[in-house]
Amino acid sequence: MKGRLAIFAAVWCGMAFGSAVAGEKGSASGPSPSLPDDYSCKVCHWKDGELWNQETPTVSESELADDIHWQVGLRCHDCHGGAPSIEDYENHRTDESFHAIASPADIPGFCGRCHSKIEYMRRYTPSARTDQETEYWTSGHGQRLKESLEEKKVDKDVATCVDCHGRHGILAVNDPRSPVYPTHVGETCARCHSDEKRMAGRTYHGRPLGHDQYEQWQQSVHGQALLKKGDLSAPTCNDCHGNHGAVPPGIDSVANACGSCHAKQAELFSEARMKHRFEEIGLPGCVTCHGNHRIVQPTDEMLGMAKSAVCSRCHSPENEQYGAPLAGGEAAAAMRKAMEDLKQQIAEAQAKLAEADRLGMEVSGPRYDLRQAVDALTNARSLIHSFSLDRVQKALKEGLDVATNVNKRAEDALREHTYRRIWLAVSLVPILLVVTLLILYIRTLPIPEPTSPHEADR
Ligand code: HEC
Ligand code: HEC
Ligand code: HEC
Ligand code: HEC
Ligand code: HEC
Ligand code: HEC
Ligand code: HEC
Ligand code: HEC
Ligand code: HEC
Image (cartoon, rainbow, N blue to C red; front, side):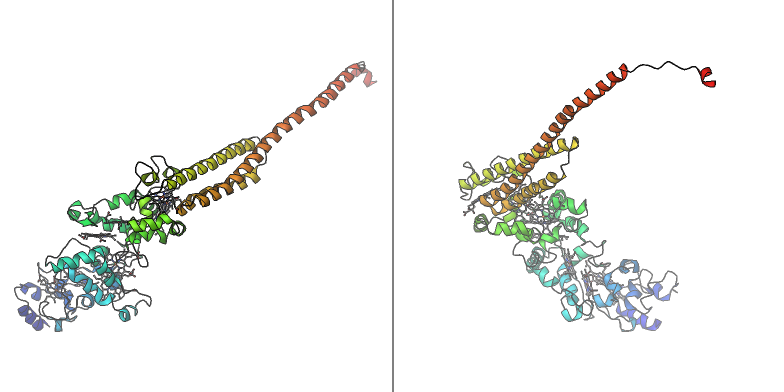
């Protein structure tokens, strides 16, 4: 074997490894037992491999131990190519079976060599997806990379497979430690997207790309739900932007991603004339009113024609935008008014029920019924998205009827409590009278002479 290695030493131009050839290797600090000793890559790329010298980059077993590829039995040569046996080893530069990575633009193809092959991947997982590479080339990242390649100045700052998944030590995507696990995706994207330098001078649809998406998202209802409450159903970057493509599959634009989770609002909105008008003007649907990254908890303040309301941005006479009719503004104000009316009825009913409860009256029935009014209010907040005054008013009216009825029953309960007290007072009068008479009568009875104890003895 040593003889053969000497031949390799000659082949590998410019390398000095005399000492490595001569040295005896201790097995205690040896490389992974899972690689045979004559595994070519191990001979030169393990830190104390036989032919290792200071300039040869090293790979340690611990880097790869948790790698999903390592765990399904793939080894260095499966990814990199080259001969696994030192006997057959040929210089990287001349070995055609070696898959060199000369620039980031080679990486998608490097990974795609396996991941785009359906018959290969399905040997491991019957339902494996094999669209990552094709999707990737359609994404903003892929397109920029392709464009820069054509300009012969490869853009090293755009993401390729290894920027999101790692290179050695790639974890299964459902491993909670994976950089693409929902709770980590934000940080993974932020490594570049919050880096002002990397984003400088870049544009998106004609405006500066910005570098605050992660910060904004972190503060949103979605970011808070995911990071603080651990709610994995709340969206992080890839839920709206897609894992590999420009948008998630089945969605025509990022701005429409909301509907995949908020189906009710999306369905209502799809029937509104406003939606179609938005599309004609090129305004993104939900995002126009809610924003994209920093989506806050909506409040009733957003509705109506006050300055704080989103509707006034387009429907008021001062900034009548995109031909938004003033009638829409009137509808907005009417919706808000009906909502406030219901809220007031509910608040009154709640106060009265609480008072009745405090006084010990049984009010669980009306309290239960009041929930219907609260539900109607919640329902109306969603129904707004139909932008139909009739529908919103109808829902609120149902709630108002319930709340008015509960209000009445709460008043009845309070009234009954007052009656009971009066009755109690009234019924106390004859009782007191009888007691007084009894006392008076007892007083008229003769008091018997006390008998002495001595008399009793006799
Ligand atoms: C005879 C020693 C030797 C053997 C055996 C060897 N390598 Fe290398 N390898 C090197 C040296 C030296 C470099 C650095 C070369 C350079 O900078 O051009 C290198 C570089 C690399 C690189 C980086 C190349 C690049 O294009 O940037 C990869 C990847 C690599 N080796 C993988 C492997 C794999 C996989 C095997 C096993 C199939 C292997 N090597 C076997 C010596 C070896
Ligand atoms: C899942 C596929 C995969 C496996 C398995 C794998 N590598 Fe790599 N390796 C890569 C990729 C991708 C890169 C290049 C990353 C880049 O250029 O940013 C790389 C880079 C390297 C480099 C270049 C030097 C460096 O650190 O950048 C060497 C050397 C190397 N690998 C050796 C090995 C050895 C030895 C093994 C087996 C013990 C191995 N690799 C297993 C994918 C793999
Ligand atoms: C290695 C750095 C890097 C990482 C990691 C990264 N990006 Fe990017 N991304 C870029 C760069 C650079 C651009 C600008 C490309 C250009 O100039 O057109 C970009 C552009 C984008 C764009 C806008 C371009 C378009 O047309 O779609 C989106 C959206 C985007 N990235 C989302 C993400 C998401 C989501 C993640 C995480 C899952 C992510 N990026 C991870 C570097 C990165
Ligand atoms: C901008 C970041 C980013 C880039 C670039 C990227 N991925 Fe992914 N990848 C992800 C995310 C996020 C997931 C999904 C994780 C999840 O499902 O929770 C994922 C999932 C995967 C999966 C699991 C199966 C699937 O499709 O969901 C594979 C395999 C994969 N990626 C391979 C690749 C390959 C190969 C490339 C390069 C062609 C690549 N990825 C580029 C972020 C990225
Ligand atoms: C030699 C073929 C091969 C190459 C090259 C390869 N992979 Fe894989 N990859 C696999 C196989 C096989 C699996 C395991 C699939 C399984 O168990 O379902 C896998 C799994 C994965 C997973 C986990 C998928 C999941 O569902 O959790 C990710 C992520 C991944 N690879 C990314 C990459 C990236 C990034 C590269 C390029 C640096 C790459 N792979 C290169 C064959 C390969
Ligand atoms: C709830 C959905 C959603 C989430 C979550 C989300 N985005 Fe976006 N993002 C959008 C929408 C919508 C746009 C605007 C698209 C358009 O104008 O075409 C956008 C635009 C972008 C852009 C383009 C530049 C800009 O700011 O307009 C980048 C870059 C970007 N997002 C990155 C991210 C990153 C990184 C994350 C995670 C921290 C993230 N996004 C999370 C929906 C989302
Ligand atoms: C992957 C699913 C998903 C996507 C995509 C998504 N959301 Fe959400 N959204 C949620 C979840 C889950 C919550 C609940 C968070 C919580 O616990 O407060 C939420 C909360 C909200 C809230 C607060 C609702 C309330 O009653 O508190 C608004 C507003 C919202 N999302 C708007 C949007 C918009 C606009 C988009 C698109 C740009 C979008 N969402 C995309 C899942 C999603
Ligand atoms: C970005 C501008 C914009 C905002 C913000 C906006 N609207 Fe509109 N709205 C329009 C336009 C434009 C139309 C005209 C649609 C058509 O008939 O073509 C419209 C129409 C309407 C209509 C008539 C709808 C129909 O289908 O006949 C109602 C009602 C309405 N808006 C209510 C609201 C309410 C309520 C809000 C606030 C929650 C609001 N709008 C916010 C632009 C806007
Ligand atoms: C024209 C402005 C406008 C548009 C467009 C819009 N919303 Fe809303 N949205 C509102 C207003 C105003 C509220 C607050 C209602 C309240 O609390 O009184 C709201 C509340 C919400 C809520 C919380 C209340 C509920 O329904 O549970 C969610 C979730 C929501 N919107 C999602 C969406 C989604 C998803 C889209 C796109 C399909 C969308 N919105 C489009 C104005 C809008």
